Length: 123
Image 1 (cartoon, rainbow, N blue to C red):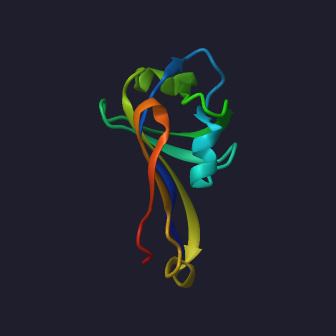
Image 2: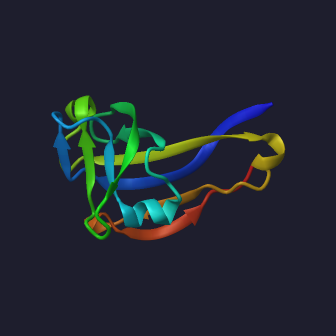
């Protein structure tokens, strides 16, 4: 049996731009993608800490070092520049795989740069 578990998380990033006329997705600074292992076109759950909204979308590559967290398409109406978001990716694993999997979590600081990396405990 497979279970859906957290793969990686960007915690506490600030939305830098919203564009409802753009063709969907979330644009994320490539440095944050590299830190967490998130991939272009990967499905993510985005949780807005300020508005309480939650939405699913997919990842677009942002310019490295730019700090961009750009919410595009219809989801741009669920958040605003300056809001704090959590970006999470999930994967399917067996119970045996869960015993050793430790999700990578990027704690984000000023300018949307990685302040520190942590690993959650395995199951």
